[in-house]
Image 1: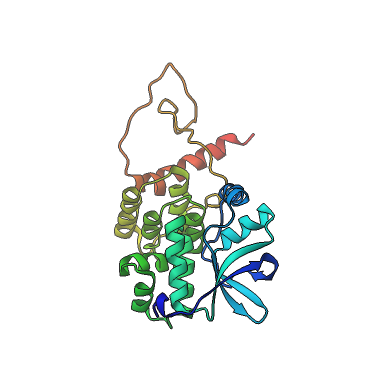
Image 2: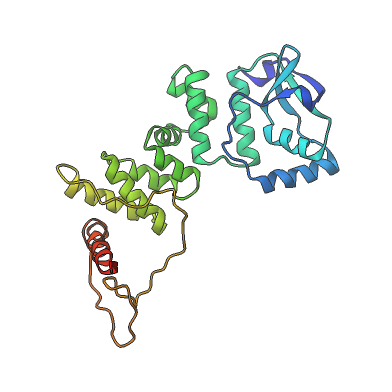
Length: 274
């Protein structure tokens, strides 16, 4: 359906008559940016009309939720709207394009939105979804794979703790315990895609089957703190002694995470006991 074929009507509608959309493409909104938009609206009004669909005597917002919130903050009573007769797949496509134009959605937000479109508007037709959002198959599939992967990895991407490429690599690990193990270190160290890809490659080669679960780590949702790495600190005793220069050794990242670090943590735990 082309937007040119849709009958639209421009109206000034009361904010009280508008309902939030059933499908909201944005999971989280930056409050500071909404406040900036609110101040601009207070000075100049809402320049770009909201797209709404009439439901009886009320109207559901199809595109413009952020402008709606900003208008509420600015104390407006009415906002300009384009009223459409139905909420069609074409309007959802307009909504997606408008979001990208104004402020890019995060991969996690796209994942949720694409999945809703796939199930609701596209009847599980993947090619139709790609055409609707005007994105390539690899792009769309990467977002859907994120949503269908490990929920803690999805949440880490949503909170911007790891990048989409890192998430894709971690989701290649079949065992949940090992996925969460590497996720913890990816978050803690701010690891790159290539670094995590190396972890995953080594893991699949050496530990994919018949290997005990990794040692437990703190929850991935724990607060991220600044790195405390000091090249002069001994990794065994945890002390810095200017009389001694630490010995430099070569250890694979995978071997360090899987073997050496658990031993060191056990050693420190034993020596910390009274």
